[in-house]
Length: 64
Image (cartoon, rainbow, N blue to C red; front, side):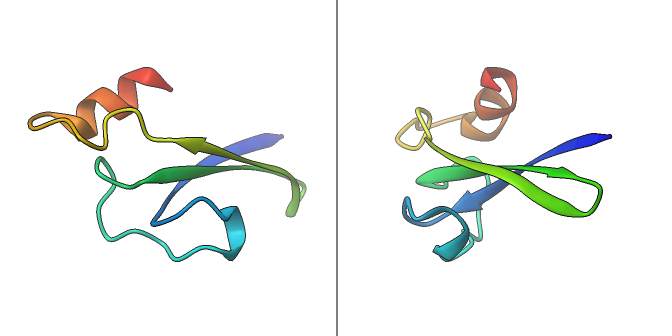
């Protein structure tokens, strides 16, 4: 079974980055694919909603 997890990050360093305290306004997301308890891949995506004034969290969830 493949599990994808979006980790909100303060920068763009993926797993080496600091986790953001906010989800919708995080600078980027580390998309981590885990299978059988092991990390298979990590992709860093910039947050297109980081500068939105309202509704950033719900917009981010709908994008991915």
